[in-house]
Structures are given as C-alpha cells and as structure tokens.
Image (cartoon, rainbow, N blue to C red; front, top):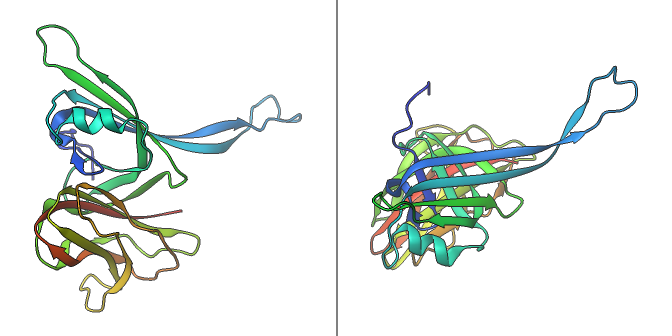
Length: 242
C-alpha cells in the first residue's frame, strides 16, 4: 500500500462502529527511552528501550441515542478496561489492521455556539497484550449462516515464542453466534485446522480470542461461523504478535 489520503479509516470499539461519527483518529505506540550512558561513552548518550504503551484518540461530531451513538458508548464506559479496539486505514478485507484491548479514559464534548457539536475520546492500553498488527479478516457485514466468512488472510507462520491473535466485534446481535479461527497450509483451504474459538456472542460487544501459541506452520487464516441463531453484524481481524 503506497501513500494515500485518509478517507475511510475504520474505528471499532467493542460493539460499536465509531467510523461515521469521526473525522480524526490516531494511534500511538511508545517505548520508554532508558538512559544507558556510562563512562567511556565518548561523550554520546546511549539508550535502551523500556516499557511500551499504546494509546488511541478519536474526534468527530457528537450524537446521543439509546445505544448506538458516541455519547452512550463513551460516557458510561469510562475507566472500564480491556475493550476490544480495531483500527484500520481502510475497511477492506486484507488491509492492515491494528487491534488491542484498551480503556476509555478521556471524553470531551460540546463546543462553540453555532457550530456542529464536537466530541473527542482518548483510550489507553489496559493489559500486557499491547497492540497487535494484523489484517482485516472480516469487513463489517451480516452473518446468518454457518461457514467461512470474510476473506482468507496470508499472515505467514507463527514462530516459536509468538502467538496467533484475533479480535471480533459483534456490532448488532441476533440470538447466539460462535466463531472460530482456522488456518491452512495453502490459500485453497482444502484441509483447515481449527486454532481457537471465541466465546459465544449473545449481545453487542467485542470478543478477544485466547491467544494461540506458536509454532504454527500454516500461513493462511480465516474466520469461520460454527453456530449462529438469528442475524449478527460482525467485523474481525487476525494477527501475529509476541
């Protein structure tokens, strides 16, 4: 993917798609710079990487409703940890996706008279998972039948010491939904292997797959609906990380 104008970035937080409420979104990953300078350095400082942190921010136009709007999604949820967040520069399946578990810690709203009412929301990582870089495996869409959903993504093998991760967003809910992550040696997926299963979804919300330890020699991955009652609107991403 070369340089491009940011026009369709996607921001999913738990069971809500903030995308069409926003005109700004950013994701920041930091590593502390620890001073490792000693005598004999020749007058130059030495540094080593320390603890990492992840933060996200978003801003757009304020709305309120019973559930599906920025205000009911932000205000009651302040300080709650481990909300599943997925951000991608485009919603296209196969495009880069960053996902993790964050908490909402800052919410600003209202502005000047005569202007569209703004809001902004800041989030920070709340556990040791940090941030995973992967691909969009399922763009937002409805599912009401079992079987593979979304697109096959080629992530490569999972080496020893690393893990397979996946995030799933149930943006609207039917009765119950169970989704698996499968892998295969080739893109034909002639003999898929089930690598993990999300907890059953029964309401809007974000689901985090229990990470699967490498080594996994397969290079191709997909989401598969193993059981569903009713119609769910979902989106999901798969990635590999430490």
